[in-house]
Amino acid sequence: MEKAAYDLLPTLLKDVPSDGTPGAGWVVLHRGADTGAYLLAYTWVWDNALEIRVAVAGQPALECPDLDPAHFVALRRPAVGCVWELAVLEHERAGWVRHMLAPASPDLTGYLNDTRAEGPVGR
Image (cartoon, rainbow, N blue to C red; front, top):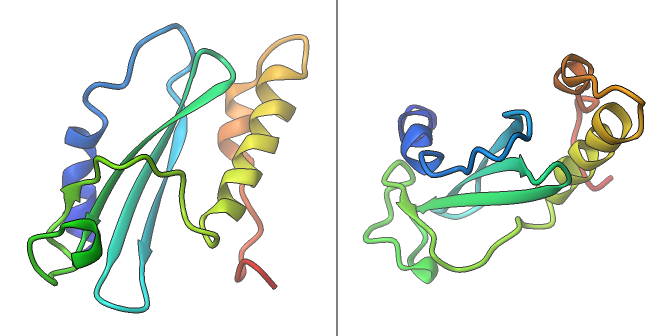
């Protein structure tokens, strides 16, 4: 599943606009409790907005062709992420503000080095 997700990323991100915003973002690969797997690629655009590209696998409710968690297909429905992934989104949002928007000079290296504390989310 992980290899299939990494192999798909260049295709998933091929049409990210180049608008002068530093090329930064993050990826979430989430294995569901059932047969589903979810690949979410978030990218910063327009200096202060996020775009997301999503692929899913093994989830019949999202029109996946089979139950294989490594057979990713692009999700065409609007999505932001599930409740477990939103903790990562909040960390990244706060880091972008702290390192890129609030200082007099943006600090992309600081943003890229700002990691979320390890451990489970939601506890």
